[in-house]
Image (cartoon, rainbow, N blue to C red):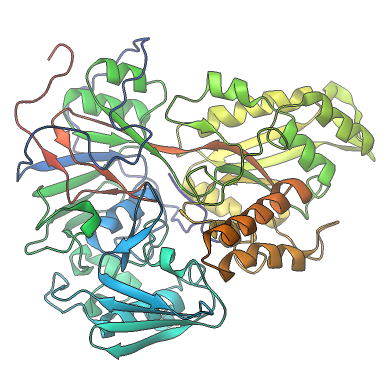
Length: 579
């Protein structure tokens, strides 16, 4: 899975290498029509639920649809990159995946000024980078300064700039105390320092920070963090190998894990085809796979493979409307698309119980979420047609509407690296055609998507993706005209006041009071969904894992990334059907 960062994540255009590690035929499972068996599915349970005692040792072979384009944790933005980064680096705080509360990690305590422009952190003692360099206040300052500001001389881009807007600098108060300063209120800063998704603030050794972007990619073993695993090797587009960090003993207290990781090694393998991931699991070539195909969930569960999942906190999969480009610069078109497709049909024919239809641009686990299922996210084809009729869109050739001699053709750009995306978009396409909207789909791999998205302001009516972040500030991050501006709001956007959008979204950052913040989050959703109809929520994505029954302790964090410090492999407890 991949999230939008600002307008889009970075990517290369290299052709994917084949995976040379697979030998022999891969068995493909057959579908078995039974109910889905879910172990800790749909919850924030931190393990796979076993009564056994953790076993030290062993290698976990883990498959993903994406591949790691660089071993630099502060750069990587797709799911593979952020997942691997979270096991090589640690954060200042840990966000509880159930409550959303931030709790200690590398910072044991923290405070802030009343204006929410200064945040002070007291660092945990005894933490070191895997090259032996102490983790102290100076290391924190070096990290944040480079992560947020970048370093052109080293080819380091300002990857943290959108997550920490208005960053002034980091003060070294003493060896164990740092203070982050911002030019304006940033209520989401505490969540930001725990952030585990796109280009996250995981700490790198000062020795790594001195390396250029090219040098970091040339030798992954020189990319050094404080995390429970270290790089052994990185083969671009094929696999990443991590090994246990000796002496690690500072996992988030909330996990109640003491000491080093249980596993000796994790091998992350890139397998783009869903059937090959599934076949690799059933043949024993891998131990677990992310990105389980929707048609494979029931069959794998029937064979005794536990299915675990967690919805991705942040935005739903969205259709971001280009507010400047014809015909989505017409609010009538945007509102008609919101109402003109059948969400119940999508739920029945495309989604599994691991997913859900979106009822807001926010995913339900995010504080401040509001349910719009009775208003703009309902299905009402008749109302959609009336909106178009009233706006002067008349039925034309082939049933597609026409206005001023121009067809109602809407061009969508999407990513094919989520198993649900293409069938979901095709279902919507069929429904919209019935009301006279010609939705043209271009759903492509990340490199092609990135190349096209660079031209989205002039070439695409809809960009379809999502953004991970378990905080309502994700709305400002994604849609704020001064930040992500996902709907291209500007002076050329008919009927839209950019200053109002900036103000309404920005006020989420002005308070930590949960009641007031929820009110601001509702105002932001009302503006995006109702007043200006800048976004069409589609479905709530999930990260779905199938694994061997002898795999335990895989943790989903607050952004639904996986940490493996508590993961382990048992012996002789494979209870699959027929085994």
